[in-house]
Length: 406
Ligand code: HEM
Image (cartoon, rainbow, N blue to C red; front, top):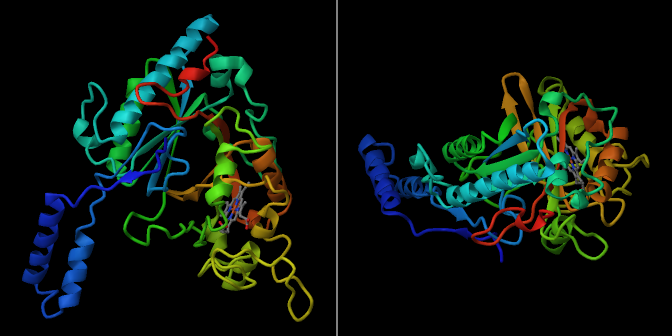
C-alpha cells in the first residue's frame, strides 16, 4: 500500500468561474487589453487551485516523509500527562488513546473533513496536501514497549558548535503537520492538540516554510534563507527507500518505521550579508545561483573533490560544507527535508533529517560537521530532538497498534 499518490481533482466549477472572472476583470481594468498572450497567461495562473489535493493517511509508511514537501510545516512537541504514581498499564493506555485520537483526526483532516465534534470543520475543507506524521521520544517508546527502544533514541551527544536551548528540546511525541494552506494546517494543529489535551500538553511549536505552491516548478529544489539551493544531493529512488525504510544490513527500528532528528539551526543573516559570492560558494562547495558544484556540471552532479586550480589547490575546500557532509561510508545517507523559519530577528532552518538508524547514518555526518565546516561560522544549532517515527497503519487501525507490548 502506498500513500504517495496525490489525488488531483478535475478543475472545480469554482476554479473555472474564478479563472474567467479574473480574466474579465483584468480586461475591464484594461491591463490585458490588446495582449492576447498576457491575458491567457493571467487566466492560466488564476486557475491553479490546489486546496482539494489530498494525500492518503493509511499505508505501510506514514505520509509526510517521502511524499512531496508542501509549503508549510508545524512541528508540535507534546508531553504525555501521566498522573503521579500511575502504573505502566495506565500509562500505556494513555499513550494508546492519544495515538488512536491522533490517527483518527489525521485521517479525517487529511481527507478534508473536520475532526469529530470539530468546532470549525469549515477550516478543514481545503487540506491542500495536508499530512500528519507522528514520532515518539524515548519515554513514549518505553511506555509502549520497552523492548522496542532503539539504542539511538536518546539525546544526541553534545557538540562544540551547539548552543542548545531546552525550550526546543526533547518531548514525548512530535506531530509534524505539513500542507500548502496555512489555514488548514493551523486548524489541524489546533484540532489535534485540543483533542488530546487531557492527556498531553504542548511543549513547543516550530513553524517553517518553503516556496509557496505555484511560485516555482514543483520539482525545483528549495532555497534556504542564505539563498542556497538546499536538498540537491538528497538520496532518490532505491537509495531513498533504503535510507528511510531499510534494506540488507540496514534495518529500521520496526518494519515500516524510521527516525527523525530535528535540529533548530539559527542562521546569522547579518554576518552572511558581508560574505561575497565567491566566499559563499567556497564555504559551501556549490554555487548559490544554480546549486551546481563549484567544479562544474549541473545541480544534481557531485562535486569533484580531487579537482585543483592552476596553483594546485583544491577547488572544493576540504572544509566546505559539501566536502564535510558527503558520505564517507555507503550507509551515511539521510533525507534532509528542512523548512526555513523567520521570526522577528531570528532566522534559520528547521533541519529535519530522516533515516532508519540515527547512529549509523546521521551521527557520522554530524560529528564531521561539528569538527569542521565553514558554514559553522554563520550557523548555530539551538534546538535538538530525536524521534522514532512509527510505521503507517491500515484503514480502521491506528498508529502503533501492533507495537504495544500487551
Ligand atoms: C543551517 C544549517 C545548514 C545549511 C544552511 C545547509 C545547507 C546545505 C546546502 C546548501 C547543501 C548543498 C546542496 C544539497 O545537496 O542540498 C547541503 C548539503 C548537505 N548537507 Fe547541509 N546544511 C545545513 C546543516 C546540515 C546538517 C546539520 C547536516 C547533517 C548533520 C547536513 C548534511 C548535509 C548533507 C549530507 C549534504 C549533501 C552532501 C553531498 O552528498 O553532497 N547539513 N547543505
